[in-house]
Length: 203
Image 1: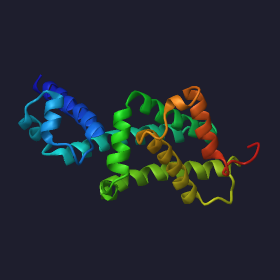
Image 2: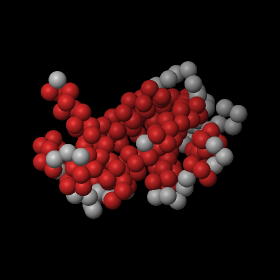
Image 3: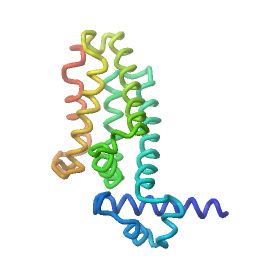
Image 4: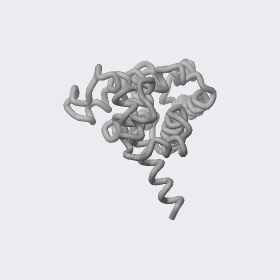
């Protein structure tokens, strides 16, 4: 029972931190802000997380581990085309943003677009994601779906870079889901942009 209660408190604190980070920014957030948002004692936040850096680390690590698991499931599916895999990835990301916009904004702004991205544990996570997609690109190139003369690593970085910039547009409010007729139209447009230049024609 104690464990369940503590896990519930930790979850409340993390969710409160995400809201405050998204609203005020990481650098402008104090532990007292998180405690107030979570409606818990100031000392309880420190008891569980030892500071806001640890909180952000947990938020990123837990989120990225989920992303890696989904990425592996999508790109290890041998029954679908590479374009379908990209569509499934884009769908997952769009759905994640629609359901958890503040979480995605915190990941993008406070980790990806900050010096924290240089931390070894973060870079290791990103490299894992690159390798998953790069491996799939190679396999689909051998199936004659993807052009054989492309540089696999460069193309992988291009795919992630394109997706990062699109979701940065959402996070920075330069782009909105409402700018499109519906979510399906948005997903199709993103997939077309990603696949342009790498897919074999009629492949």
